Length: 423
Image (tube, rainbow, N blue to C red; front, side, top):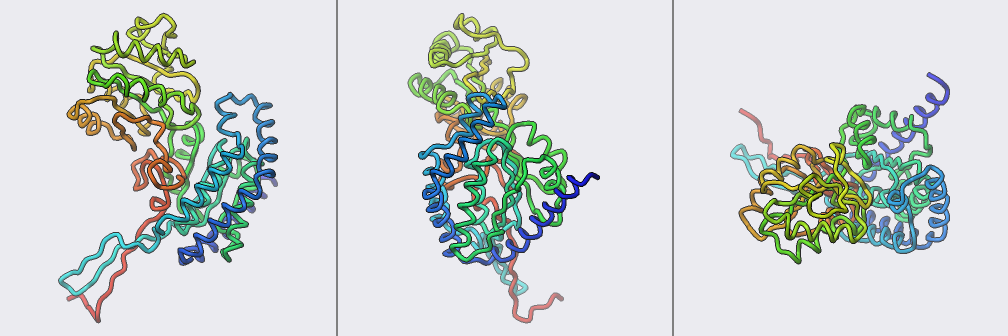
């Protein structure tokens, strides 16, 4: 092992040890203290807006030099409005009920035992994410709210922005009298630090990866620590034969174009054959007129001569750009079959006025989020009333869909007797 790897291992273990110590204190911090820290961090973000924008400019320059796409640069960019949104997110989390200590269930047994199942923090949460620097605030804030210490490892592109945001979170912790080590940031761009995090079973209780297939795949294959998988968002929209024209036009265009770089952006449109030549044609034209490149199968190519022929690589592809795959299918069962084959279990939507068809779509798919007559862009913890989110979990663990403060807790059983013994 070379010196560099030795140094990184030592650094990461020191971060882990300090996080473990901070987590022990955070676990019983009062709701008021945690809320005060979040409010103080939000104030610090607003005060530090010029410094954050300056740090972000350095990241944007780095990103342009690396040849990031316009959509990826949009994910990276921070302005006053986005910084204000981060601060608002922290305040929203501060205002939520504290999940820690909440009684999930309680009951009495004939033996005389009184049993309560109570929410408890996970401990230390490691978050590994790519370009979006706002994740620093969201993840740090949610971990704090749920009584967990956080170790944050942002993408190399957002290194300076994440550092400036992290400093505001630490300012909030210190102002409220909580340990500064409760939210730590990995201080290097070196990928060896990620590999080290994935093996730190003695210090980290769960890893939350946020990013593209490459990152999540690496984490899932290499991690020794449990993982809340946040796979890419290959979100499908199925246009049913009984869709309402005006709703469908509005929803499909919004689902694709509102922000193309987020995981809730629609990446594939499935068109029910009976409406392909009518409403389907209209929607494909509306997408193309809005600047979207439609990659269609033969059925879709027949609808508009501006459609690009789809290849096998277009099914199950996360574009994160002004592109969408589209194909004509024979009804709801063919649509759900396509999603099961090519989806990433993130978010799927159906456009239909038929309750039975919608129920069939909901029953036959097991994605984390299923929607009816609504844009997939709503796949977001804030839009679900959770304040911020640490990610959208696509795995089968207890955390599925938007992971807010409550999903970052486990539970323990508190059992009370009165000299009770087992016969």
